[in-house]
Length: 275
Image: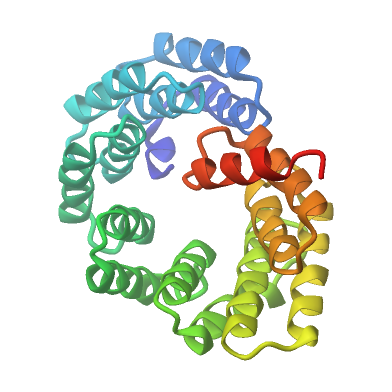
């Protein structure tokens, strides 16, 4: 928000700040009204168009968001966050090619932009380009060593490639940080997955018990986090507790109907419901 310092109107700054606060509290209509008022109080500003785009993204109106980001970039082609946000819109629309073009442009404009490196790593991971994704995460952590989203994505990659010790080290720092926030909950679920992966290599009741404790803690912190119920369902499935697994899988799909494992979960639920 460095562009705020260039705003001559204190009134415009107030409306912009309040609009941002409204977005964070989910009061989208009030946010839009404040951003529109801010626009009327002075010359076109890229930062305001960018926040209007962020608001549209939050509401799932991705094409509308892209129009705002394009307007921001017409005003200021060097606004890296607008390139980043347009990339996110394309990705959520399923247009990975344009998402990569936009994220590459963000990094051309600002190479020390850790959020952009993490987003590009996400796109590359989706395409199975593991080494390139790890490289991008390394660059993100170079610029912000404590960046939790980068550590968690590294954990996910190491877990998928069965590098369990590397996965454990990647998420430990997040687990030691503030408890209760969403990244901490994500770390709890990933650590539980690591315990289950370790159990599959070397079975031990203690590993399953530790996984269960972590998943219970995660579900208490964020009861609407679908991944928690997915992994706990897997744990119940391993233990032969079909009723409990079915219950957790059903809750997972209620929270996220488009879950990538939904077909397997639906088959399991159909086979075991009522047993």
